[in-house]
Length: 329
Image (cartoon, rainbow, N blue to C red; front, side, top):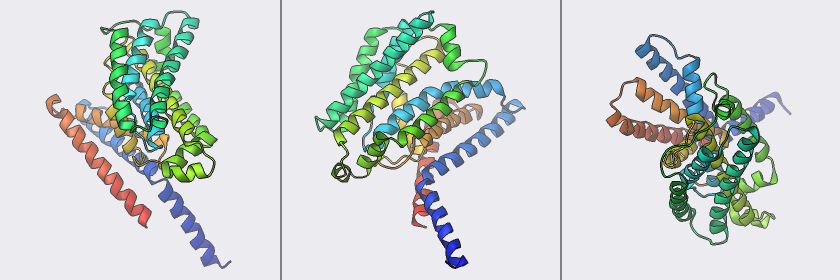
């Protein structure tokens, strides 16, 4: 093969790889940019750069959203959407706050039970969507109310107590230990992506009929995707309880919309079959950085939600526009 043809082939492969991962690449670029803006505004306000305390606080505060974003990604990839994420976090956070004790055995037992509760919530969603043939947005909107109601029943008022040892293990205030969990989560996704289940999730998101024609059980895959999503939402509830050292049956309400925002910022297509949970994890950190930027920019709290929404809409439109241009080229 002539040298020119070899070079052209290599450029074509590189261009194809860039186009396939454009969402993840844009998420990385947006995260770097948001961190740079945050550091600049922090320096202007405080006269020094953010240090270890700020990093630890940011990571600990973001981990529940990271897990919620992964949960949302699993469902979105199947061309669904999970509006019950916040309800599952409410319920599992409440159970964790009243159930976690001081002994290691009790901590482990309650943590496993909480994850199983999350999986059961996801199973309910998955069965209703897969076998009831109901729209995911309607099913999960209904179960959101159910889970929130049960959560209030479990913990009518904010309270409970999480042992210091549990907090140190999940959301250690002395250092950004939670980053290790983020890395572990990325490795878990890397492994899951290469399993039959992971392949099936992408396949039914791209074309469910074609996936079934190739031997993929679409119903089973959807149910497992929702179950895994519920499990990750429950893990978010555990991290939230560990970080706050107590529980609140309404504290997860905001995670439904922010998990969708993180998914979109991370380059995951809401039409299914395209994107990565790693991108959604980066999207979660971008979302947190936006909040930090607005805070240190001394934006009036009454208008923070407005500017946050404006910034996010602009970022999503910009990411979508750049993604289309890259794919066309």
